[in-house]
Length: 547
Ligand code: FAD
Ligand code: SIN
Image (cartoon, rainbow, N blue to C red; front, side, top):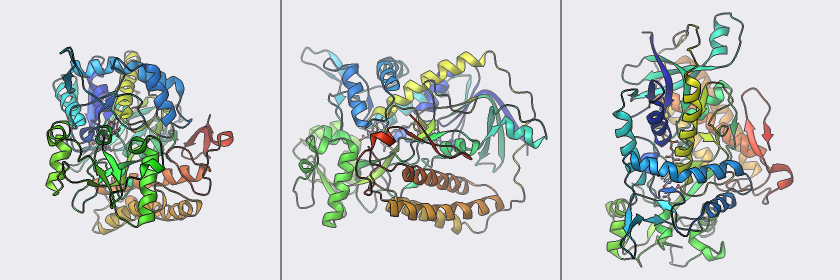
């Protein structure tokens, strides 16, 4: 079956970045949003702490900028930090106009204002939240708004496989390969099993992060780095993949699959303790349990290795049950499900892979190095986070960049026609249906364990080299397997996760220093002379650095 769908804008992903862009772009043209599961399923939907923005009387853009730059350990792009933070309040007002209800409280004069949360590395309370279900509230409001717009069509269970490039189409037809514009994407329809050609004037990657490349992660199953892998295969520049943020406090319980205990719990006074009850963060940072995330995660990792324990404890038992139930209803209920009463019992926690600071390199309007292709949200590397993201800055980055992509793409779309060239339907080649899915499961498991053991919070040259060899072998095996069998979701995700693992390992090997989220015991200090720059990988090119 050869189906082709034409649209002005193709958006891949329906989290905060994809939906914010889609809602705006509907003013300028037709929008197709493809999303690989149901529309709500995204990292956005699980965000707890909230969205950082300057709204408090005691806060200022300069303070938020300073905190972001400090966290980023020298690699933030200062102009990007400035515009993201100063454009934040306007984007928050827009979310509220679209129906997002952030938690409000009454001040001493009975005026209603946002209840602002505090998280690690922030010098002020500035995190807007909807109790501890901020992401769910944002995703609900955006999906409702986008779903009601005539110009927006959302395709659920549609999986972006690969981007379509003008040069590839021309080459196949034996034509001169002029230009390298992105013309759309091949998309797998999981229900019918067919592959659809989506042809678009502009493509926006909003596929989120890649936490599933690690064995232990806070991320939902959709986070397999598909957008970064697709962009890399298409020849886009990919930056700073070595900077993986590990969240210090993921619930430790044999039956709890990746449940986060928000940093906001420490923001409200939660204290980290060893199993015996002793505090330990005072030995690592003056801000103790509320130190920046990289420091807390590394401290916990060190203590777990030193003591041989499987977890540490997060203790907020000094706060009242009423407060905990009202401020953290989701965490409170989830803990109770596992027999933990957080008003009486400290919560067992471990660090887990949480956020990827690197991604598809974009400019200040979300343009990638491929004409016609934009990226926003966690899939992109904008320069905001540098070597370590400040908590709750990612939802902020997503809304600001979705708006900026809209400004640029909507301006361009009026004068743009579809490139007048026929696109061949997806070519499955000699593929047949797989009867050995055990290969997929096995490779998935091996990649995630290898990344966890060798490319985790603490790295060394020896471990990275070991990981490189293994991942390379698996990539070869997948290449062989992938081309011999018909596509399905598991196989597509496996191919992407292997590419992501390889990009992370190669980037980590190139950075011979320790900075922010990248800690290598063979180079325990930052080396500003040689490494105050991005690590950039591009298919077919030798790695280089952008200063
Ligand atoms: P996502 O929200 O992940 O959306 C990606 C979308 O792309 C999904 O719809 C997915 O199905 C789709 N997709 C992926 N691949 C494909 C494909 N091949 N084809 C089609 N569709 C595809 N950040 C904060 O700022 N504050 C917080 O409090 C916070 N808490 C968090 C808590 C948790 C548990 C997690 C996991 C993350 C948290 N983060 C937080 C990070 C933040 O949630 C994410 O960075 C942000 O939501 C990413 O938004 P996004 O739109 O880029 O991607
Ligand atoms: C959290 O609630 O701890 C997550 C915040 C974030 O990742 O920004």
